[in-house]
Image (cartoon, one colour):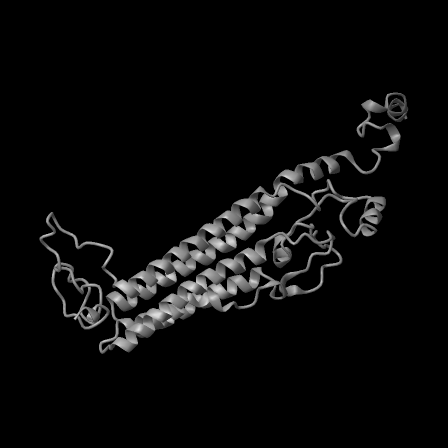
Length: 309
């Protein structure tokens, strides 16, 4: 009883700091957490997107390597096709699981670059080739680069902030309706395509705060709330990365076009000591049915470099 009386007499010394009445709502610690989310909530969301993009490119890079290794060094065309198909399917599955179909997910064709590469290399490194087959293979190679440029556009479109009305009913995996007993938040800035994998939870709000949100269509009532506004520096970094990757593929496409017109080796000299006494020694070692391990020998020009004759 004395303790309760003390809380009334010295409310600031009570556990809640407000005597026997308890802390008023909204609770201070909830609002402190809400203020902190302005700084790190965007990082949490776009970190998850970077995980997806990083793993996609890692598996695609390995798929390209295994395709080149199987065809250029081992001459195993069917192993190349199977390896590229399996790894490409893995990338498709990762993308499908993390991106909602109605927001640009599903199975985008531009991810299939490694498998198309296996087909193009099969034509380039065939035992019997002609100029028409080489020209078709070069066209397919240009198409593969364009697929990656298109993938950059898709990555940008699914990762850009949605800037819609904030709500507390984020969709679940597979695009199903929200979990009514434990739904997650969907901030206005959150990319809609990733709302089911973010699991963002804001501090609880009072009934008055929720009613104020429901009557606000433009997020004006929560303009300073992390549901409507956070530090978007992570999106700026990710956007810059996507632009740089797209620029790299454009440079690659430009170089490929120049090589198709001028020849693969017109921009570089052959290795050797001045005055390039070994010029011509390495012609043709990268191609064809003869093993490319013959680095120091002149191999028959049957395949990719046959155009030089």
